[in-house]
Amino acid sequence: MSGETWTSDQCAQAWGVKTSTWLAYVSRGQAPRPLDTDGRRKLWDADEVRSWPRPGVGRSRAGAGPEAEALLAEMAEVADAIDELRARQRELLCGGRRQGLEIRSMARASRISPQTAYGWLDGC
Image (cartoon, rainbow, N blue to C red):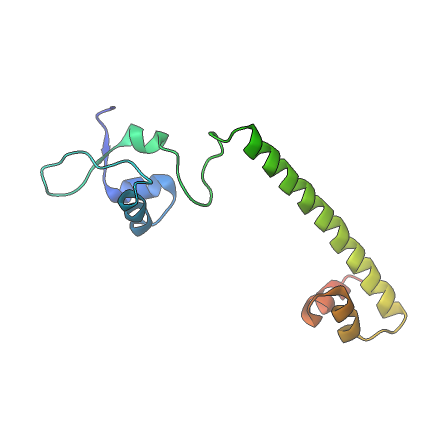
């Protein structure tokens, strides 16, 4: 214990969440328990808050094991493949425009909204 204590507002700020979110984490046991206080307000040990593994979106991957790292790598591969396919969809839309196809039919065939098709065709 460092001796430095934080209020719930300071803990929330350190974690990048709202105070209500911090207090929800505490109530569910997903954050350190407050120190014993004089009953006025709850305080937390700053070092414990800094080192506690934060739950939720944006949490640190520091504790992730090899299986989690492999899963994240696979997700990145899939995202890259999707980006390539989207680029190909755009090329096909441009080709369809040159051939005079209707936007609605191209959007339906591409499984995208007509608004998305119009947006992608702006670059043709």
